[in-house]
Image (tube, rainbow, N blue to C red; front, side):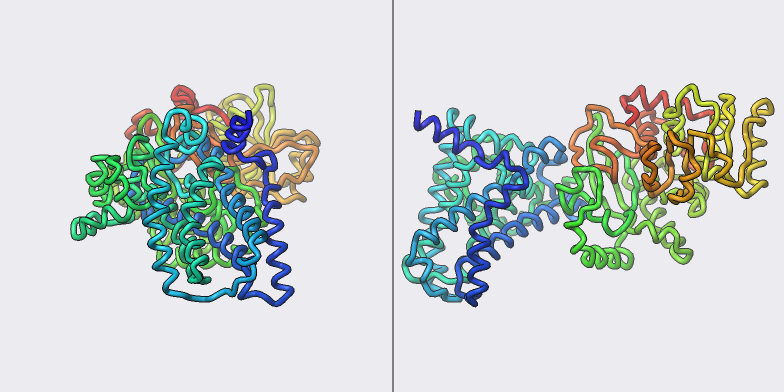
Length: 625
């Protein structure tokens, strides 16, 4: 009974129900550190060093995660090509539980051992490094190796270790995704060299920091899913492959589960006869940089603003895996975000941000290194078009089938909705798509069938024009807000003669004070929204979305569609949209690819294609969001 209770306890975290309040468990360590600061013992206090050390350990995992997921640097050396999906992200959400546990253990140990607590803190002692290295090789490595093999026995694997192996794609955070018993074993392997050196009178501050942070760095490197060593290094120094493991070496253990059990040194797998025979060949293959795939579809996005730039998948996984909202904890990082914005503006080209698979085909999101405000600077226009053009030509060169332009990348005033590039490069094999046909279809299918009158702002824009033309054919009265009679008449003349009477030009918001269906294509201030009657629903195709000012009205989201259920490896939300939902222009490009259409979708929207595209989207499993 006691053994069963212990087993149950050591296979789950006792504070799992606390949520974010679990960080209060750092309280004793933080309190001791604050007490040491007040006493003026900043350099020679174990509590201060523990506090700093655990902050640095969290930072190590974050930096390794960011670096390994910067696809523009790492995609050619990724070991497992699959993406990390929302299920794995949610499972690993509390990856840092082991840091809390080890902080509690360290606090208890120092509080209990008076000799350790009062021991003088030597800054550096070279003999301690030799002792730590000997203990690591002589104890930590074999101890972890045999404990790891023990965890892979059937009874223990199901209770303690299967959770760790449930993550299909290793990530630095996966290193922390394990049961308490596993992390107790790792804590022993990690701290034994340090405690051994301290007990022998050769401990030092530098040893504690360097050993523990090196331990974490090696763990994160192995779990990073990106090969960091060149195969030529191991060919020049063959013995080195037995002294340090690699991400590809670890990936074979993670996927096949019957080999490569070592901590950091494959030497112990060689001694135990558990080296996977594919280890070295896989390392050669991955490190050659040829593990790159050509995407079939590319969504060409851009950055919105400084804050949302931190919503990118390789920055903070806990942020990017949920719809974007303002995170006040990110505000102190704005100077860093600003620095990166300047560097991107000056030096960067279009880069790969994220990817997923749909029906076995690779879909990628590329980002033009420009922010929303850049698109409204007259002198930046040519530079932005040059970046978009280079991205299209790159896609054409490598064999991308369809590239879809997002938001401001297809602005009419910027490049005619993509026409500029088609006219300049008439022989493009890649299909350029603005996706606005599906955007219009999504907005139109949101409008209730009993609506008889609508009010449109941004009425003479590309989307405003086609929405008005479509609705007038349904005998719905369309009030088009525009001061340009010339542009209004041009659109009206495009409508069949018998439906032209349903298009009405208005020049003031007051004209819609009795209309409860507003289609917003131009940003509305709270004052302008006041003209809408109570109960109005605001449909939107304006970026950024309007402020939800009226509590007596309802607001639609930007036009979007939910991806089919067979999407794989999707782990980031697209701006403010829910998980698995993408903007309609993104979805429009997917439909274009899945249908195998050979035409470009650029320039003005063909009103006759709206229903065609909508039916095609539904046929392929995309659904209204």
